[in-house]
Image (cartoon, rainbow, N blue to C red):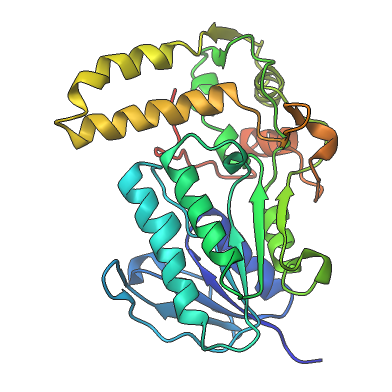
Length: 320
């Protein structure tokens, strides 16, 4: 059997590193694309090659790609602001697509997001713009739209450690998700290389059922850290207030425009579920949301509490 090979773009990110590890564990040849030497600290492995590369919106990527069975793009804007989203979610991915056209039979596996089902935010429109570019390119593809990441649901751990309340928007039960770990998502992405049923399709995917609400998340964290649950409920309308305050400044200030977009992002995640959207019934449908893997969010919280998993707060997703 011929050894499989993949190119991983965004290889130093949260999911990218997990994809590199999963591919190496399966015996793949892995080419990890990185944008600077400082972020290229991977453990040495005979099947791993690091590709140093830079991107310019004018000239594109300054690299020639090796032949591979697939490119797995884990590129994603860190902030979600319009300029950053256009550069990363659209332009960098479009540049990758252009680079791979001389390659024969290479599949483009795109890590997208389930929230693009109901787009209202700049980064969602940029993701959809590239999804459409990929879909119409004639290149073989798989578009993977995961639900909430474990990491994105850990933002309040620092609060709980300090004895503070868990903040819930609304009554804490109006939204839900099926969280997926980086390990389970990485495995799913790697399977897209070889499984025919995942080829040339848009693939929503979550972790194990049942769906979890913010109140459920709170109780899982308090239980993991052995603390009595304390929950504070906040109206999502607070985001409207912040946006209204910033609105007069937006014509003159990019800072204000970006802050206002971040408030819109916060409001979106406070009011929308990360499940498959049933447009006929106009509901988020847990039964229609595929599941994969075996990692559970509660176990992840417990491992953090016991020091078995290192939790690094992500400043770019911290809204509390």
